[in-house]
Image (cartoon, rainbow, N blue to C red; front, top):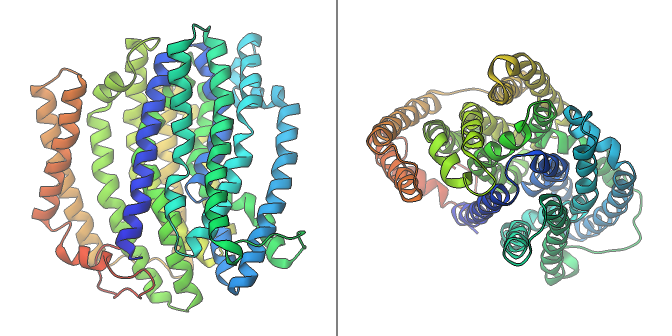
Length: 518
């Protein structure tokens, strides 16, 4: 399958998943609003959502793909079966501990609620009901890594849709057929999330079984150096891959001291995750296997070239997305969330948080792409250290900025953490000789920036002419901005015909050093 077709398939699945996620969060806001119950529910979902997003975006691929790619097909199938079996046992034990210690977990997730025993008890309840999804999505992610390594992307792209689709169905049923208190609605939704995760796992299991024993072969797990490295590296890889999600987890803890802060941060983050999640999924599912193959073949220069071109793709998407989210933050918050229990004050708070988060979107995207090189090389210690540097900056900046700016200050802290993470990754790559900006890349950045400026001016003019926040108006803003950016990108040379030619090359073919976006 060509890189373009693979990218389109994975990208389409990611986009549809994010659209369903938008629909789900719109229904969340309508059903639960942004009060104490919503804060408890969304705080409880932070931990399972952290794991779901990290592994769903290929968080385990950095350790699984390189390890399996070094083995013969039969050995890789056996090792994949061992990994699934051992991870299943470990996750069952972890889930048991979470179920027992949910009260303590609730306090860690939302320390600002320590004086509100009733809300804190709801956090514990919702944690117990929703955490089993972690078992399902993690095992599904291991299966996805196996399929990605064999060039199979269909199930990987479609299976994650089950979670958001299942939650939307649950929300529709609860809202239309039952008149429940807010706390009970949230409890049913927490349980529904675990059931939806089970459906995702079933879809992935069917895809693996369809591939036969050459994909996965089960036996009684045997302790081996490869399996040991997978287990020991699993947690560091998840931490490094999910750096941005960990920053939001820390930000949620700080936001729990602010009324409705958890909810505003959650809803704004969900909007930001649409472009970020797309690039994260493409990076882990497509770029990482490509870089790993080049590194194993000793093609270090082409590895650097592939990294550069991937950065161009990232900036081509991230810069206009960042500008558009900043300019359209208020109409987005109004159209998506302001209905039912979600009031105008919540809209204003969510919009300010979204504006602050949009500033960090390009840096979060760049760090995600650049980290794939560290993962392909097996430099997990460096990847983990760079993620930790961003976490330190996030916490310090959020604590300093929350006083003068409220929850928006916490969001600014997250953006600064993403900036620090990017800088640390670049520094790490420079030390091992894998970071060397070239004139072609810098020229492309200037042209992308010019196209983004043209789009931004157009959106600002349109907002001035049409200030009303209506669904059709917002759709016109988005479509018009996309068309204007595309035209400006073509006019400035940010995108050329050669870029499309390089995209259609087979993913196993080496890239030319002068190839365009890939």
